[in-house]
Amino acid sequence: MLRKNYPVFLVLVALFSASTLALTVDAKEFSTVEPLQSGAHLKLDTYKGTINIIAWERNEVEVMARIEAPDDVDAEYGAKIVAATEVEVFGDERALTIRSNYDNVPNEKSWLGLGTSKVLPYVHYEIHAPRHLNLRIKDYKSRIEVYDFEGTFDIETYKGVLSLRDLNGDIRLETYKGTGDILGISGSLDLETYKGTLTVEAGALTGQSRLDTYKGEITLIVPRSQGFNLNADISKKGVLISELGDKSIRIKNEDIRQDLNGGGPRLRVETYKGQVILKH
Image (cartoon, rainbow, N blue to C red; front, top):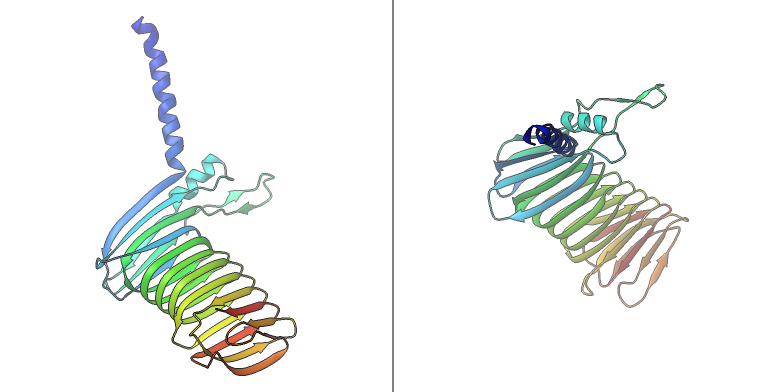
């Protein structure tokens, strides 16, 4: 009986091993912990996936990443692009760069054999960093979450989905078609979007700020005590709606210089075909 069952057992082991391999070749993980001073510069350069950056009280950065193949590629090619993608971390405790390196990702032949194309895998980041931080993110199409930091924040994304909360400092954001919620922020704000939709809820804007959209929509919500020195350039196809102060105003096809709600820091607003809304 043992002789009859033994080959079957081998077959089951082989099938299990093959199944386990199939589950692992289309994903791999990376992790490292590096020294990073409070107030240091941290840069992240990636293509698509998720970015979750969490504040902690240590003078070091922890980088964890999971590289995964998209569902719409075959298993063999998925394994190749995952194996070829690397996470690089370089610099020192004053300035550190994290980079998704796709340089060795191979092309894939089209199903007709008439050409080649390259598909990049997802890279999912979870990063712990000092609370006082100067952060720079350059991204293509990721879901980005950054919470509870103080410093400067410079984020560029092509079609990213943003969730920024409780940031204190100078915030610059540039997006092409992305969406985002920016809540509980204070300091200064520089937002530029082509076709994106952004909602900003500010605790206090104390520095010069700018809102610029071509075809998108930006909504800025501020406390009732917040005033601005408004400097707006609104085309005939765009619109600025202000509900600050005692009355609501709607501006189209006009350049305007006006104190809103008693005045305050300068707020520059520009739109061509989009809409900017200011309200309490």
